[in-house]
Length: 60
Image 1 (cartoon, one colour):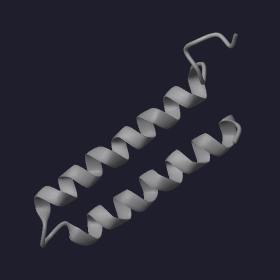
Image 2: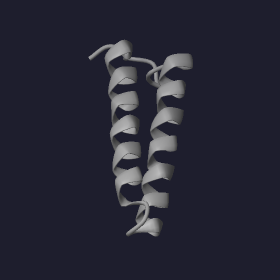
Image 3: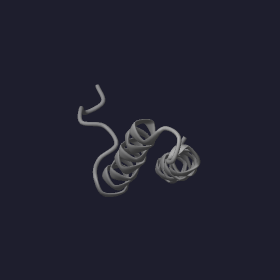
Image 4: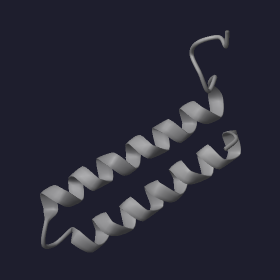
């Protein structure tokens, strides 16, 4: 996997989780809020992957 693949997967995951959160919003509001936080975290991970180094250690 390259950087572009990792970013695409995180954004796909965020979209999927947001869709699931919207479906559960009325019946399970607490679970919906947790899913939305997970989607926000996925977007943050995608931004970190996009802007920063992929690994914090140097290869030996």
